[in-house]
Every structure is written in C-alpha cells, then in structure tokens.
Length: 440
Image (tube, rainbow, N blue to C red; front, side):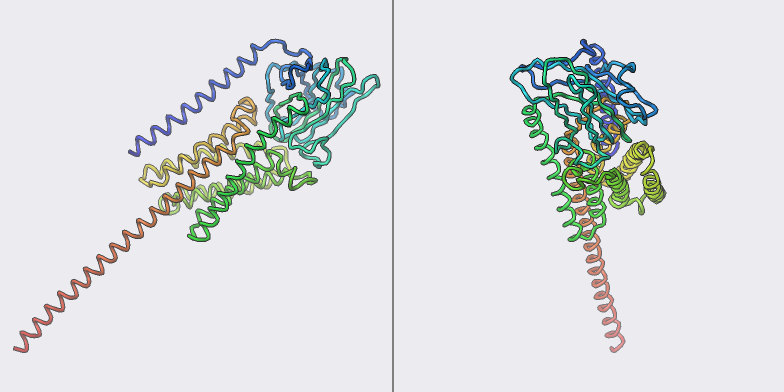
C-alpha cells in the first residue's frame, strides 16, 4: 500500500511538471505565431476591452536615470508575447504603445496595469497640441493616495479629445518579478469584470479566515501545538496575499509606502511556521531526529537570511530560492514518514502537493521562466483553501490516531491491572491454603 501510494504521487508530480512544460511551450509558440505585432490599437464602439501585449514596445534603461525626453527617440523592441514576463529586473523598463480612438459612443476609456508587484509606475499621456506629457507617478512603494483610481490595480484614465493617434509611455521598476499585463477597457466593462474578480477573492479570503478561527479554537481546546503552527502558517500566507494582491495596501496600510517589509514578514512567517508545522505534525523529533535537526537549522537560517536581505535588491531572489528548497525538503520528509507507516502523512502529502507546486511555479514565473498568469493567479486562494481543508483532515486523522493509541494504552493498562488483580487473588488463595495447611 505504501509503495503504491508513493508511486502514484510521484507519477502525479512528474505528469504535472510535464504538462507545465508542454503548456508553456504551446503558449510561447502561439505568441510567436500571432500577427499584427506592434500595430496601433484602434478603439471602436464594438469592442470594449483590448489586451495590449502584442502592441507594446519595450526599452530597458540599465542606468535608471533616463527621462521621458531621453527615451522618446530611443530604439524600442517590439513585444511578441501577450503578457511579456521579464522576470526580476534591476533596470527601469520603459513601455510604449500607440492608440487611435475611433469610438463615438464610448466616452470613458482607462488603461489597467495588473502586475501589483511593481514598485513604481510612471504614466505619460501626450497633451494633445501642447508639448509634453500628462504625468502620474504611483506604484506599490508610494502612498496609495498617489493613484488616480482607488483600486488595487494601477488604473489610468485615457482622456482622448480627438481621433489623432497617441503614443503612451510607462516607466516601470520592481524589486520582484515584472510582467507587463496591460489592457485598455471602457470604464463600464472594467468594473463589471472586476466585480467577478472581487467575488472570487472574497470567497477565498473568507474560507482562509474561517479556517484560521476554527483551527485556533481547536488549539485552545486540544492544546496540540500542531494547530498553533498551522494557524500561524495560514496567517502568514494571508498576510502575503493581502500584500501581493494590494488588498492590504488599499484597505489597511493606505499610506504606508514601505509595506514591502510587511510582505517579507508574511513570507517569512509562512515558511518558518510551515517548517514548524511539519516538525510537529510528522513527529520528526521522535522518528526522524537527524531530519528534525536539519529542519531546525534551515528555519534559523531562513529567518536570518530574509531579515538581512529585506532592504536589498536580492530579497525576492532569496525568498524564491528558499521557497523551492523548503518545498523539496518538506515533501521528502513527508514521503519518508509515509514509508515508515505514519498514516496521517497521507493527508499531509495531498494537502502539501498543490501549494508547494504552486510555490515552485510562482518562483519560476517570477524568474521569467514560465509565462505570467499560467498558474491561474486569481484562483490560487481556492487552491490554498482546498489545501487548508485537507490539512484539517490530516490534523483530525492525527488526533484520531492519538486517541486510538491512548485507548489502546488504556486497554492494555486495564488488562494489566486485571491480570495483576487476578495474580494477587491467586496468590492470596495459595497463601490461604498454605496457612490452612500449617494450622492443621
């Protein structure tokens, strides 16, 4: 049974990675076969959403010092991808595209930039017959009040006053990965589409918060440290998601521009307590003492390295590397415990598979090896919520196993007590006989 389960799990992992690689190649081939690259975007009343990936031109400013006047005459490279994923860049990235408004009924158009990881976003819109550009400077490292719209994405209005072609520029910088996900919407279409995204996000966050409360109650009731580690791990993930999706910036730390440290703290808590949860749940200290010591060392190194790297440009790369290493170590530890016959590790493996695979995919996406959005970015909350439910089953199975062990121990103790009582009675009978024989 153990070998069969391990084989199936390994096959699932291998198939998952094969599908990932195949889909990535197909995605790239489809992008290369698309025509009309670098043509201007023609806005009409018939269409109210325009993905801009194949209309973009990109220029990398390695000095990070060039101004809009400097780059206007630079040689840009046309994009051949729907969503150009540049990975981690220390340079400033300039993006431009051409737009011509031929719509007569649709009056309000907006530009949506969806990569919430971007540290600074500078928007330049030409001012008609006047020289120069209308400029908006915002980004996740700036107060939320710098945004034109009160929204988690970076939204800019496009004030077309005539049918002349406009060339729009953006300057982007980021400590994390950079994916240029740009779309032009009519204002009405954007908010209609956004309502569905908010619904998915809300349900996902709700499930996570409920599970945090439920498992915290179980910890208080059962005094099992595994529940506390799991609650802290889930809370760290929730903090990371609030930062990653800009919900926290929009609702809680509205004008706190350095909240990147909050996200780093969330990631640190998530990884650290995931290791502690693994140790307590799988009982590594008792059954795998060498691996337990190794996990302890890894957790200490993780804390030190992430804290030291927070103010540096290497922070995101270090976090990515730690995520991949920790994922492999935890899966290996769980497989070993399963082979030892520890039944709750089966649920643990099932629960860990999706989020750990997600961590690895996100890491490779941040490095630019996998197309941005491939891992269904907006649905990761549901994947994690499913994993939380499986973890709850694993914890329940573990509690049942502990109760069974206690019942067996109590039954054995009761049997031993009955046996001792029987032996005492038999000895008393023998003694009474001997006493009776002597008195005769």
